[in-house]
Length: 236
Image 1 (cartoon, rainbow, N blue to C red):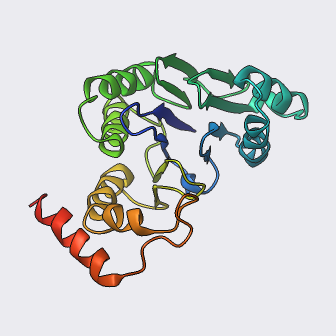
Image 2 (image 1 turned 30 degrees about the vertical axis):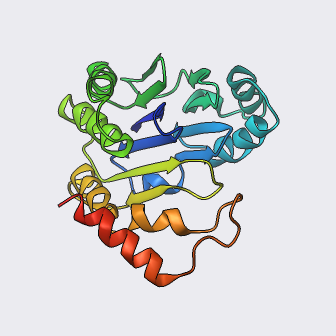
């Protein structure tokens, strides 16, 4: 009932997931990322524990193939599930159960994985992939959204559209960007608007938050405001 892309950005080291569906609040259950370890998207008749338990296995150093094998072994509903995994080394594995609704499937290439079910056809994934590759020069968040727009233009979820999400992690355990559109007539357009809004202050402000290397972050408001003003002035 969904399609999603997991991708790695070699320029920033970030890993991200973009997803869209004709279902409520897709961002609440599908995307899961552990900084430095990898990402999982769990969909179709979604099993949230695929994300929770799968990230635990990635943290233990398991290969994505081992992660999926372990998840499926403990789930008698596995044939109704779809899941794909990319680890921090770019290794990919996926499962699409026999009971997932057509069209359903998975494709992968260097640096990204795309999976979907209940789609209008295989071109949804193909066009998502082609757009991701074609937009390599764009910032990572914009590139992921552009890829999803291409998949939607190819037909997307055959039931229509309702929600979308974008989750990106860098070096820290907390996200670089976490955007959700839970219920909207044009969720990808709203997701794109939120991403643009994030560049007004958030993407500049987050650099001053506490990190593992700098546990206090920057707390001087004058320094923060001056840096944000300078960064945003350069974008006008």
